Image (spheres, rainbow, N blue to C red):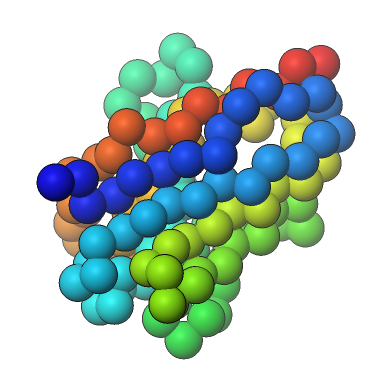
Length: 118
C-alpha cells in the first residue's frame, strides 16, 4: 500500500495556478514535518526541495518559489497541499512529497507532473 500519493498536476499556461495534494499514511504524517520536492526534466534523480511544513505549521520555502508557492497541511485528512501561483515554464517538473528534516526518506510515490506552457 502506497504511503505517499501525489495528485493535482497538469498542464497550465504561464502565470496560471495549480494545487497539488499529497495523501500520506497516518503514522508518517503525524510524526513528521512534510515537504514538497521536484525533479526537473533531464535531471534524473535530482530531487530539489521546494517547501516544507512542520507539525506545528511553520513553513519554509526555497527562494525561487517564495511568494508564489504555499504549503499547507490538513491534519484531519493526513494531506499536504502545495498551492502554486504565478507558474513559470521553469516550474515544469514532476512533484513529489516526502518527509522533511530527516536524514532519510520514505519510498517515493509516483509524483505528479506539472507542465507550464509559455
